[in-house]
Image (cartoon, rainbow, N blue to C red; front, side, top):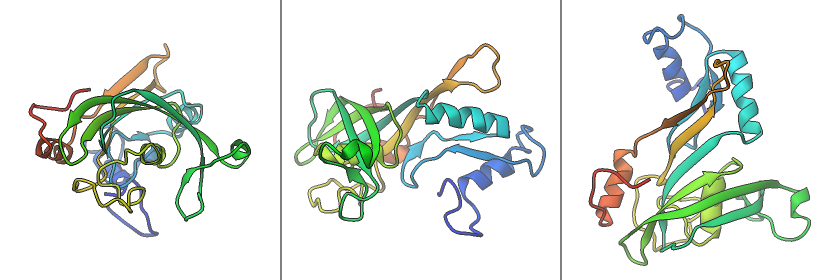
Length: 222
């Protein structure tokens, strides 16, 4: 499901469905606006953020712009990763082959956007060459940042048909095995600056891939 309409006139995107449910949940009157603050790629699961008022949207968008948001993702990646690391690059809209990617060279900061991802391995799984469950904490939030950084690290996300399109050794997955698990931010309507935290459970399709690779348990470790 698309987070927002991809084409003019498209119906059934998540923002439309949530807006239609707000009156039924008694959270807003019929036809009340709903503002998109934070969305996900079509094949990424997990938490998104909508604002029910323009003031809330402006507050939350400012937090995302300043990177004052706690964002934690889980991913199943190709290969065995044993050490935590910080990945810092400058991302370009076109790395030379039509895809987004990291710039090289001293002039990079002047032509792209700084991107920082903190990666920590959580669990080793089976599969040819191994698969690792990793936690990714975003210091910045650029388009496709996690997928690009992990692919350039040599550990592409399972199911990624863009940044791992030339890999023929990837265990099969029904979609990109990337899940936005945690969001934390200062709530826009709390006068005391309260930080709220939300967590999304691991979806069943991601659990199914992990179990196929040898995981035994109720849910993946966090």
